[in-house]
Length: 372
Image (spheres, rainbow, N blue to C red):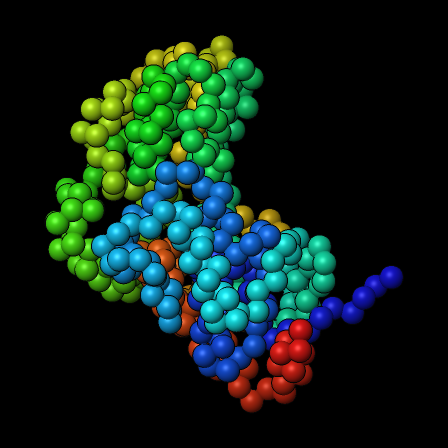
């Protein structure tokens, strides 16, 4: 039996910081929306991250539009604090979030979209894809050739050292997540951290210097490193490729913890063991891949990707497909686009443009969305 799709003016896919910010701004300009979230609770994407994770920005820069983060300004929230905040945010503003709904396909018909889910299909005038900054873990193809007795985890599925087997650990990828995990694991396992050195912040983010530097860094992330500046345009491909300087854990911390630091990359597998570019074959019991994430648009039946493998947009709008938008993509407009402190600006821009697009149209979607 075929059921008629439920009509909606705007469907937002994803109830993380990007999706919630967009729903908030749409409500502020008087436009209805429906937010679809695959997890059972708002904030679950944060709850599932590794246990010791804390935000790299202080609480005063961790709030979404309209609601400050409920913690002292210069504290650094845990991942569970962030999850609870997002859930409270959705409840406080009575945002129209439907949890436990998985979107399997997005397609277009005429000037409208069909959002196919495991429950109800939606016939929408606009769709905002807000599925997260880095939705698809990246692991090299040769990882499948490692000895099956080696335990492999991506950083997205690592929670704490108890996830690992006894024996040495190789952490692949020396950006901030890799350094954080290697530092933690070294307390219980012999640990090697491999990958190019991408630098480090020259101060402690939680110290006095951090209090001076954070306002400057935030301003730069919002207004200097943007697609409008030569510096921002040069930075964008590096940001989207993944990797970044060490933030909380520094080189000295890794050395003090006993982490063996190797700058050579893992390039292939030899006799079931990881082979580094410098010729070393490592005898390890575990590999934690901190090799970043990429865009996953396999479920979108529309040509949205640019040459760099990320959605081709202009301030979030897919110009080749009017009515389709992205929020929360790395460097959507600025470096801050992928940060809690900057996603609200992009969401506001998208919401205002949706409102302009819908002004003057007949409003059956508004009535049905409000009643849903």
